[in-house]
Image (cartoon, rainbow, N blue to C red; front, side, top):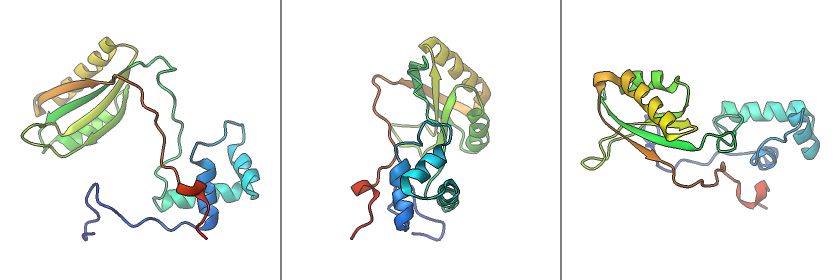
Length: 179
């Protein structure tokens, strides 16, 4: 690891989890229970108070072991069946500032910068757009293009052709500590 941190895609040391944290991650890696008091339900499963569950999750968040806790709706069931990954070749001097603004637009669920893969792939900004039709996605893409203005040199839309199962990281062995 360099002084500036690991390079993207390079291996990093695995975080050290306590036995309770491993059990907690295993109990929640498929999602929190869909009940009015999810932390109480997880606590009951693990034999601890809800406060202990919340404190441990907060600690995992603070340490960066967990990136976020949030709802993950099934956008297909909500009628958002046109999903276009738009890719943009944007002036490097402006891509961060413009990307921040694009990330705030409705319909944008992912917006991030990547290295170009020249000479074949000039795109450095990726923006995932969701709509109920391709026309809606293309309208959103025009809004992005207008926002980018003359900082944009080229673009493309790559539409999803099939739905792949999306899951987060799963602990091997069901989260049980190694003996």
